[in-house]
Length: 261
Image 1 (cartoon, rainbow, N blue to C red):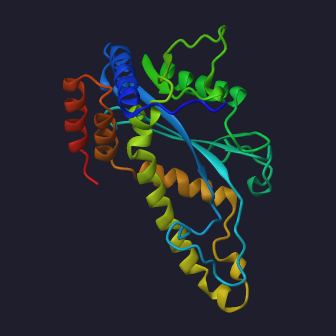
Image 2 (image 1 turned 180 degrees about the vertical axis):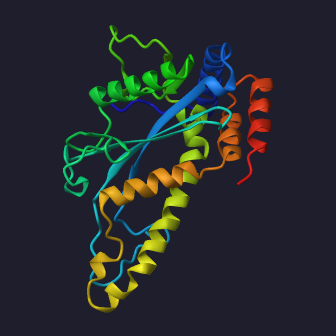
């Protein structure tokens, strides 16, 4: 039997209760020490115009090449952690026999190129090591996806992990409040630029190559694009969720306003 959908008043109440809970959890931290991570799928060989038109160019095929990108920010937008990538191949051919770290990327592999529990632990360990090296104690907020469950015996010396309340992430998760959308919009610009450079391929009958790019190059796009997301964008998206103390949110926005694009 299907579960009944929450009424609007019930849903609003649940979100507000969740917001109060998260506010309590963030209250003991400075805005620069409160982080959120969320994953997004990057179909790096797919036309970025698919949301505008459903018609593909003659001779093209819909690409299913995908990589998962885990994106992490802090509340004042001063730290956009470099993307953490999850692909399907343990040793992608485009890596040329090198590891992701050799090439300057954090890369892990799973069968379907999705985050899983084991890879999440690697992500946490990497983040904890980074914060320990900087002598920082931080709070990390994540949604309650099954892959985000940490082992009870996992000891994180410098990262406190907290789950956002169930069924509230669309309202309370900063990455979903416009940060990832900004990242994707910028990536689309790079995809279009690449396609324009490949336009001669269409003229010679190789239409399927118009958006073709190696995963390694796509990872470079993602990293460079992520680094270009404005601090003001990040700080404003965090403030929009209402999960920070009002004074803390205002301070984060002021810090973001100091950033010059």
